[in-house]
Amino acid sequence: MRTARRRATLVAVALLASVRLAGAQQLEPPRLEPARVVGQVVVGGYSGLAGFLVGQFIAEGVSESIGIDSDAGIRRLGLAGGVIGGGLATASVVYGIGNIGDQTGDFDATALGAGVGFVAALAITRLILGPDSWPREGTSTSRRWAAANIVALLPAIGASIGFNSTRRYH
Image 1 (cartoon, rainbow, N blue to C red):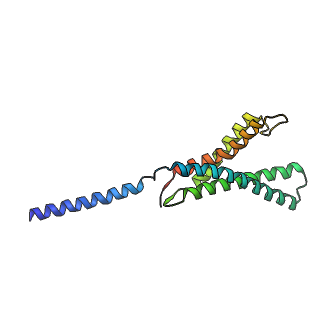
Image 2 (image 1 turned 135 degrees about the vertical axis):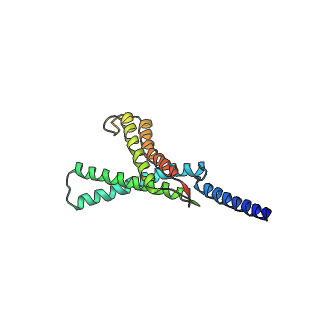
Image 3 (image 1 turned 180 degrees about the vertical axis):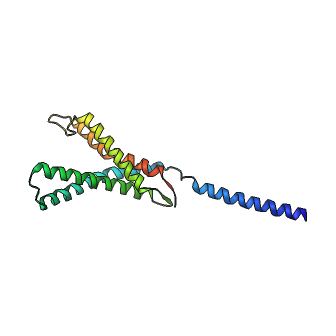
C-alpha cells in the first residue's frame, strides 16, 4: 500500500513539474531571428518613406480643399501628414513582419519605438545638414544620402526594438 501511494505521489509530482515546465517554456520569448529583424528594418524603413509621401500628398490635398492658401501652411500640414503616414507605415510593416508565423508582439510598443527612432533621426539629421534639417545649396550628395537613410532606417530600428522587446508566442 505504501509503495502504491509513493508511486502515485511521484507520478503526481512529475506531472505537476512537467506542467510547470511547459508553462515556463511558453513564457520565454521566441529566439530572435536575424533575417526577420533585417526584414523589419529594411522593409519597414523604406515603406515608411512611401508612407511619408502618401501622407504628405493626402495632407497637402486636404489643406488646399479646406482653404489654406499659403505655401508655408500647405508645407507644414503636408509635413505633419507625411510624418503620421510614415510612422504608421513603418510601425505596421514592422509589426506585420514580426507577426509572421507563431509569434506576436505589442503594436503600441512598435509604434512608440518608431516615434523614438524618428526623433533620434531628426536630431542626427540636424547634425548632418544643419539647423534647418534641409540640404543647403552645395551640400554633398553623400550627406544627403546619409540623412535620407538615417530618416528611413532609425524609425524602423526603433520600431523593431519596440516589437522585439514584447515578442512572444501566440
